[in-house]
Image (tube, rainbow, N blue to C red; front, side, top):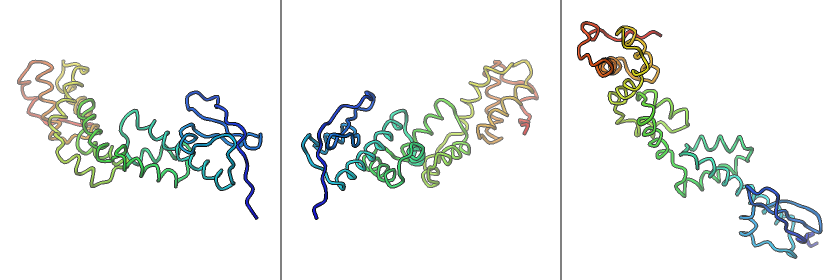
Length: 229
């Protein structure tokens, strides 16, 4: 027996102007909606007959299109990791199989690249919020980047330079009347950003010199940084 087909009797523009979408009416009744991109791609027109299987394929194709568009919007603000993108799409309620297909498509097109993301993250941190290598690795790990990529990207992080950049910027907000207080507060700040004690000691001394113009704060400069846990 031939499967029952339903005829497209109307295609009407949806009310959502942010996402161009059309409502499809079959046999005089509303049946489903499609993004206009899918509508054009499938060349749907009034009078066309659709089987149940074709209707299912259209709705599935529309889900894939919406998932893809959601991913592109997410990526438009800044580069993202694969794990970040997957989590975002899960939060939007898309099926696992659809998400994995969209992620693979984005990777093939070069729009999703964990190494490029890790490089972006490192350079952004180095420029605006310098971190120690340890903290940078932790952040990338939390973003779901693979260990091999993390090690490759962070291999040449210049910790002394980053620490000094962070120290000089932070030092402007710390009173310079007492070197011991200055040293403790700035040292704690740099420790929270993942720098090693040796790097912290050098950065604090240089930041003090730049802050005060005193190239030799007597015996204070010879002492190690005392970091409060």
